[in-house]
Length: 253
Ligand SMILES: [Zn+2]
Ligand SMILES: [Zn+2]
Image (cartoon, rainbow, N blue to C red; front, side):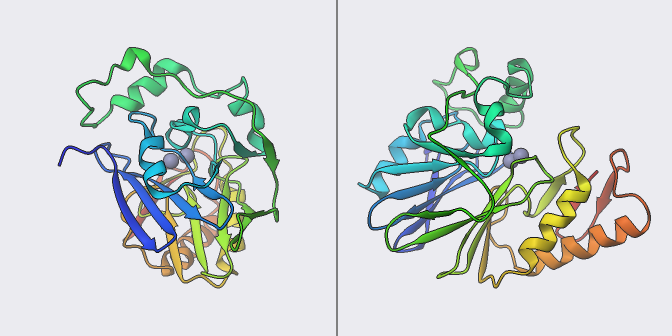
């Protein structure tokens, strides 16, 4: 198979659109409601995700990004309506925090790029959001309500999305199996722990991460919490402390 995207279904109205040919193994999620479809993240922007999304829905599409890092907004250019957290509105509208040259390096790193892809054409998406989101907002897509949970730490305006009815939690870069990132200057390790504590309170049936293995137990949330609490007790929950390794994840602070 030559397809750039891999599509899996979670249930009749919820899909995963994955990019396994890049080492980041990015996952976007499509939630179909009665009135709208909600696309959580748009991936790397290497191939056209819109073409995959319209195979799965005929509804108008609202796009949200868990956060404004290049690998979550790559396909925003194909959609008209997108929402971002108020604390990252500038990152998508004129002040993206990384230079294009560096992002181009990330795009090409450990990636089986499509033959027709030309890195010279790659751009970081910039545009004006239709709406700014904040903690506790609810996105009603008709028959399905998705709760916005502000979870700063990995980035200032990072959000998890939670659906009460299904108890699905879409965790973005806050929780996944792999190297968790809290060492950039724009990260905040203390807030990261607060955010983990916040989502640990929720009744969750399934965690859907933005990267790597989809076979992920909800127990990982408590494991990350315990790890960060222990790091904090050692006085190391601050930038420059290094990499801490655990069974299913590492934390780079
Ligand atoms: Zn990120
Ligand atoms: Zn990411």
